[in-house]
Amino acid sequence: MSADIGVTGLAVMGANLARNLARNGYTVSLHNRSVERTDALLEAHGSEGEFVRTESLVQLVESLERPRRVLIMVKAGAPVDAVIDDLLPLLDEGDIVIDAGNSFFEETRRREERLREKGLHFVGVGVSGGEEGALNGPSIMPGGSEESYRTLGPMLEKIAADYHGEPCCTWVGTDGAGHYVKMVHNGIEYADMQVIGEAHDLMRSLAGLEPAAQGEVFREWNTTDLASYLIEITAEVLEHEDERTGRPLVDVIVDSAGQKGTGRWTAISALEVGSPVTAIAESVFARSISSQRELRAETNRVFSDGVDSTAADEEFGPEFVEDVRKALYASKLVAYAQGMDMLVAAGEEFGWDLDLKEIASLWRAGCIIRADLLDTIMKAFDGESSRLPKNLLLAEEFTEALNECLPAWRRVVAAAAEHGVPAPVFSSSLAYYDSLRRDRLPAALTQGLRDYFGAHTYQRTDVEGTFHTLWSGDRGEVEA
Ligand SMILES: NC(=O)C1=CN([C@@H]2O[C@H](COP(=O)(O)OP(=O)(O)OC[C@H]3O[C@@H](n4cnc5c(N)ncnc54)[C@H](OP(=O)(O)O)[C@@H]3O)[C@@H](O)[C@H]2O)C=CC1
Ligand SMILES: O=C(CO)[C@H](O)[C@H](O)COP(=O)(O)O
Image: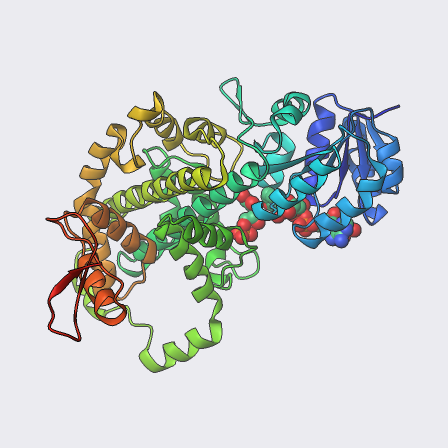
């Protein structure tokens, strides 16, 4: 029997994608570096559909119908190149190699170029939704050539998450565009989780709400405009009791956040394309600080935990909790606004015609950042490009909500600063908003200083041209 598609790499994501494909009627050839994973999958789930067992890439490729479709789902980085190197001599012109892992987009661009020169299609596909999504319908963000999508698209759309009858899968752009969009998705995911963590910390430290009680608060928030998968699972995690100790699980988990790289890549790429994704970058730094455990312990010894004791004298009741909800909504909106802004900048830099409305539509189901908010984001980005808002915060769909949240957002950031509770993304998101709306920024002084020490010149508000003050001379101004 010839298979419709081959999957190599059968850990959590590959195994579940393979099962999803088989459950949708495709014959799936299976391969894993160590054959035990292949056999474990067949033993546990072999009856779910048509699978072909293979023990080598040669067997995998031989088992496929043409043009061959090989989906790689191995650890990102060097393993992807190792698999490609082994596959290349086995493939023919027109075959399609799909990398559905979290690969760095620049590597995808390089791999796409390398395979294109050999007449092969290389498709970098962003997949989000974790284990459950991979099995039941992830959000899928494919890049690569438009031609390859004609062959591959229907298959991906069939296994993707379904949002009211629409598949959360569409071709987003050439070469590394799919992996770029997934990377930004993860950047937003970082910021979203960080602001949820800040809300949790503030409600615990200032309002004295224990995790189980907070679970109820998050459950209630999930019926408001904050409704989203991450808010929903926050309620579950906070309410979960540790089996061993009977304490809230969140209290026995080490407070050091891991990271596999996509958030860091988002921040690095944003710096390179000149997009100020402050909320996303602060979230990456927040994870880094959390992992500096020795330094944190020593600083704690020297300065103490430091939640200001005056906090107990103040009223942090239900009104404060509602303020936190509003600060969370506004900061979450900033994270999406920054992610979208960055996609525009990257589109210009890499020649991708990214459609923000389509991208928002892909994230409405199946993925980790799925949220009711995305429907409104789609509306904001609907219409002729010349009429679209320059930034999501300017979309009329959001200006009223933002104005309504603003006083609460300021109160929460002020309370956090006053009482020593770190809230880096609540604060930096508010600073981002304030910076954008400000009539004049202190960048004028920065320009003056740059001109003083490095003759870097400046422009004037009143006259066209570029100028320099003779700081070490008579301090007259000359045109540069
Ligand atoms: N886990 C998640 O929630 C999500 C993961 N992703 C991405 O999907 C990809 C797969 O993730 P996941 O399923 O968690 O698996 P892992 O990232 O843990 O990778 C394990 C798989 O990679 C294979 N592998 C590792 N090195 C090599 C190599 N040199 N040659 C061949 N195969 C190799 C392993 O084979 P062996 O069994 O022989 O060791 C195994 O099949 C990653 O890029 C990940 O970032 C994307 C979305 C969500
Ligand atoms: O892509 C994902 C979800 O969308 C993966 O779960 C990824 O591992 C999350 O990133 P990190 O491990 O750095 O938190």
